[in-house]
Length: 189
Image (spheres, rainbow, N blue to C red):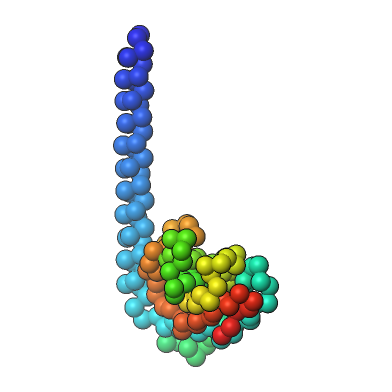
């Protein structure tokens, strides 16, 4: 077998691999879309309210980080509004999670603009939630930048991995929007 034949054979195997990989990705995408469509249909009667109630300011100049707290109400039926169950368990059973996103309101010079996905929020039995938000490292171009914070109720595994998202993902409910300003020394509300 000549080198040309070997290259041709390897090219064919690589092409077959990418064809199979594309087919698998297409099927997984269709399954996800179908799951989200079913969830949207099921969730039409759900009541979900999210509110960010507190953000603790940071005094660390090099790593602006704040703690946020809030409250989520999650009911899948009218009966649940009377007999409240543990919110965290109900959300888990319905495959719903809370995710927080932060977006600089003034575009950054670094061209890394969009919504920054934050670490997963912890939801408590009573519906309270808490988490930590990072605004990245303080840089010259970040001074005096305002940031928008929003919390979303989303289906589990519906948000693609990755730190920066061009737009907010599909969500069932959103919180109030909180704006904070990084002034070089501390975050101000």
